Length: 139
Length: 160
Image (cartoon, rainbow over all chains, first blue to last red; front, side, top):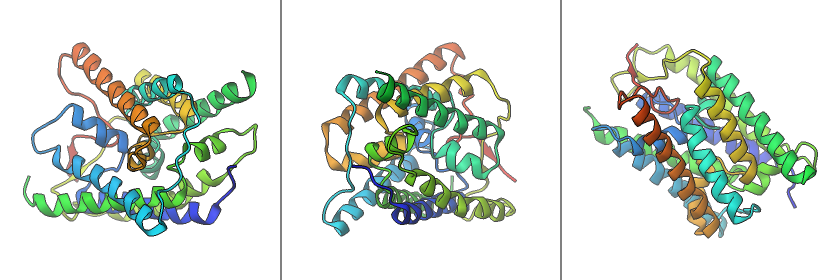
């Protein structure tokens, strides 16, 4: 079912890199999605508008793709409902506790050569691979 | 907080390009992400090409941008100031890894996938926000609202 798509992967990755670049060049900020969303839950004056607008942009980008391609990008959630809810809770809590997610640590932090982000990225990739291994090949 | 409108438009453009990139890359699909994480199965290396493509841009561009005195539309760069490998970083990243592996969604793709209208996506995003709120509530109680979170996407201004 899943097949290797290196070209669209690379093109999408270059666009994400462009978005992360523009965010630092124009607004002086890192484009970490967990930080941008999570910051809305601890609002500070003058610091919420751009977060909401970034999220609107994220949705618009996915929508533009859907309009151009005639259908939204495929989204197959294979996990069962209890795993979806547990996974969501862990992703939300963990990214806030660990100060970042795949974009914040994995893209911005690595580009900054941040020691914290290198460790965080290695950890969440390693633990996610272990989780998939246990879920798929042990049980 | 001057020049609010250009900065808001910049945030909109960045979000839009980011969302378009996620959709094109295939990373909005948790099945494809799990296909990368499943190194013992029918491995799909696409995610490495997405991260590689993004880092190919950001590693050189960050060097050039951070050599500037300030960003184009803001007074200073807002970068994380923490450098220590503390317990929250380790535990938080590990918990995130478990959740990411269970479903295949990390925050960016999950939010972008809302446009599909799938109940599973709404369920995941609602639980994710609840997890973030739980962390905000617990840390607010524990550090008495000192708001010392130096987040990778949410840091105190650091004018250079």
